[in-house]
Image 1 (cartoon, rainbow, N blue to C red):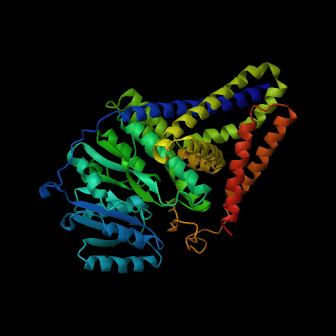
Image 2: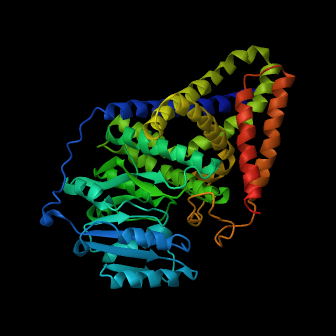
Image 3: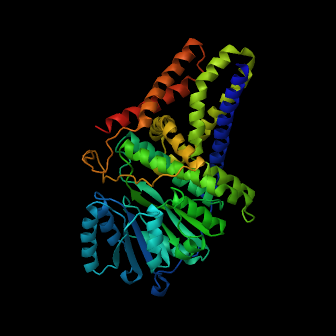
Length: 493
């Protein structure tokens, strides 16, 4: 029994320490982020007042069954301010429902207006989004390839804000920051916006400012066509083809340019089944890319050591959910071990590292929150509530995302499941009639219900032993698993 106790403690400690090192890396990114604010951007830029410097651009719009948002997407893209003779639009339509006819009708109307827009369809979905992008690239006329998912609505001057940076021939990608059309729709959209804002400020700027690996985010960015080809083109052996190609390009010494000040609005998943789908794909894809790319990063002779460390931790992002879930499951046995073997009490000081990690995240995310939402005492109070809500719900997703991570690390393949789009921007908009919503309750939801009971047992155990060190953690687990479980049931009705 003592041996088993040591095994539990070792695994528990390992999970906490790995989360702690990840927290240190995030704090280092915060330092980088703050330093970047003092840097002056002297990037070369095309002079667009000279027509000969305006390059040809192809916009790719990969879509699949986007009945509710395709009209908004195409109307927005058609309004982009750019010389028509230097612009081509490819609608890469893999749809298998009647939306394909609606899309064709809209495209025909836009084509009549003089826009160079093509409706490209395939007889199969080989390679899913990556396959569609790769096939479109064969006939793309543009030197630069801008990509937008169906739920994005770029500003009219978007191309004029991004394309000029390609004057520097070493730049392979220009990525912009995502905005959120429906940020305040619900608790779910608020915490998604909160997490994405941290990624698109703290992480992207913190990495890019020090020339560490960053990733093209799949949309709202532009690729140099030459860079795509040189890096090996789009590949579909992971669920995050954007992260994969990003690393392959940077390993070939292409530079990425991240524009924090260029915001590209988009719609967040408004119901939990859609968020589940997106989270599963992102986290499994992240794990698949760690498996695929980690050795290439480690053995690269052109990458500095610090960049390699940040790169590996970046690829391990999704694996933090595995560590959180391991900590959640082991925390209750740890309580019993602590109260049975008094001589092991000193080992439980390891928990302080999780407290420190939480503090590091709290400080880092406040800086990014303040940068977008504004400072002041009132906003700080709002931030405190939002931070702990985010922290708890992230824990609530830990089981679901752990399954995704394990599948990715173990090499289990699965289809690219699109995130349903709703065209929801206010509480007045209805989503329950959306034909793309799955009405089935995930089998994982049953386990999440059991994890609610498990968290309650953790609280009871702490009370029984008069040991409240883990009470805040178990309370957040209870709220997080409870939220995910209840929303997963009610959103299907």
